[in-house]
Length: 146
Image 1 (tube, rainbow, N blue to C red):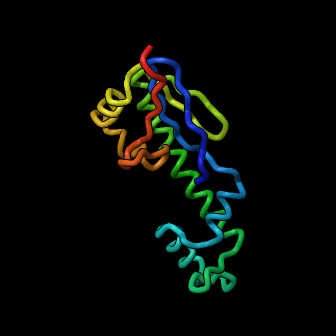
Image 2 (image 1 turned 60 degrees about the horizontal axis):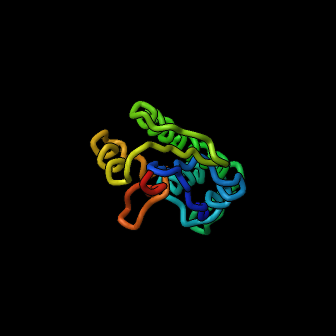
């Protein structure tokens, strides 16, 4: 995924960004050229048996196979984002659309936010759909003390 600008929450607010989509061409380009995630390679290998235009050994896949893979990836990603957003909303976070992302904000420090997200069991799943910090956890932006 491409680098996104920092999120700037208001004073006393913590924010996390959930990725919905990249540009369509970027999504498709990742599906056309390796390295592919393991699940995508397996999908292509299954299709390779019935489509001679696909040759995973030579990193050749068809546009239709790549589009199908993007469809699967988006379905999985959006299902996960919907789950995470529902948990955050249930915890009182405000969520808004910003470009191709959702930004969730809550009035708490990043430390408090991480603790709540871990206690609710959503911090781990969030890692697949949000910006990551240096420690491999959801990236939290803080607007400073109010």
